[in-house]
Length: 301
Length: 125
Image (cartoon, rainbow over all chains, first blue to last red; front, side, top):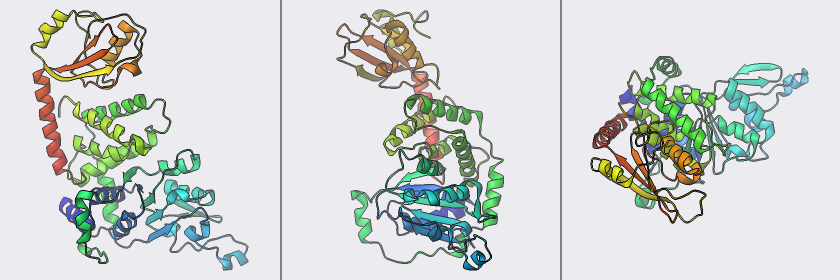
């Protein structure tokens, strides 16, 4: 599996500059069936990354949309069915919209208004869409959100932000690598079938990863990171590791270990925490340092 | 936890004797120029013993001996197993010096190298 994933990462990263890390994170998030938020200015290949990822799993429906504060539920959950309305039923035709999609990319996601947020949160949390009086199962595997600003101070949007376990800042190509952009060849990305995964494979990974061990040494480090976070940001209500988040972090670490062909989580997996534990971008570096410090403080490996 | 009995303040010569076998890894001025409410203390010598509270040993020493506010004192964070000397001068400048036994330093370097290899082999990093 490692070989296939390595080739998959290489294929997904082809013709992109300085996007290896975000591609890896996006793929890992998708395999872990987690949500990913890409934060950064426009024109940093966020949509392209998402479109590429949408090709990884066979037989999936992909939906993408650019939200504005005026976006209506019809635009993202589907139009009301006239025939159902004539029968006195309130029902949407959801085919081709978020409720029937496996991979969803929402650009400017924090522009979502209240009429969209409730249904979106239900789909993310419970994988369910309330279509009129019917409760329909939503197949969502992973939601990828993009934004150039974070929703600080808006509790509804903060609830949505909290659902993104993996957070990645995507920036413009650095001056050192800008030359590479001049030599890129424009071509439509198409992933070869051999590298694609199936939904069954994803389910098998989830089941088998569940059995991965987390050694006591690693548990101690995670506990220590949690305590340090609590202490360092005791006056800051934004930076905290909720129980829900902790459980999902552990799941991500297990997926990382399993897809690396290991039976247990090891120290290197903990470096992924730097993409999961920050909320405000200004605290990103501080939290990374706190994580590194705890990992290297260990007495034995 | 501290030199001799708990919270005992070591003399300069006692500390210098110990220092002969230790490696200096950091020496940093951590606080300067603000009037603090404590009397002059020459040295506090502590060993960092608790990982989850990386600098609690040092912090406790400062608090108990000087009544110094933790947040003001802790500009740098010693690691577990390291030793720290806090030298507070009459002009109320505080110097924090961190030390590490060579054996501990070696162990830490070895661990860093092992983690480096782990990282190189981790698909997602």
